[in-house]
Length: 102
Image (cartoon, rainbow, N blue to C red):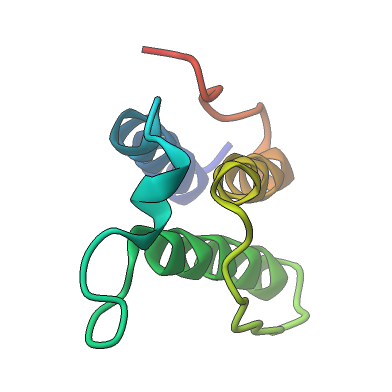
């Protein structure tokens, strides 16, 4: 595997690990924390990260497809976050960090 792929996979694993620590055990009400009218809520940020991972995979596969997703229910958005990371990482090889990994 090339150094570039290894770096990308390491970056994805780091993002999954750090993102997982930030959202682990967060209550559903956390999704709307902050000032929803003037800034991105945690749910909007997580949806955007999911969109970025989907876009990155589409770029890697030559599709170049962007979606601007409406945030899902918090638990579903968290699942989407890890699913998008895993799909992107699977494209490059072995699966990325699982949601419960410390």
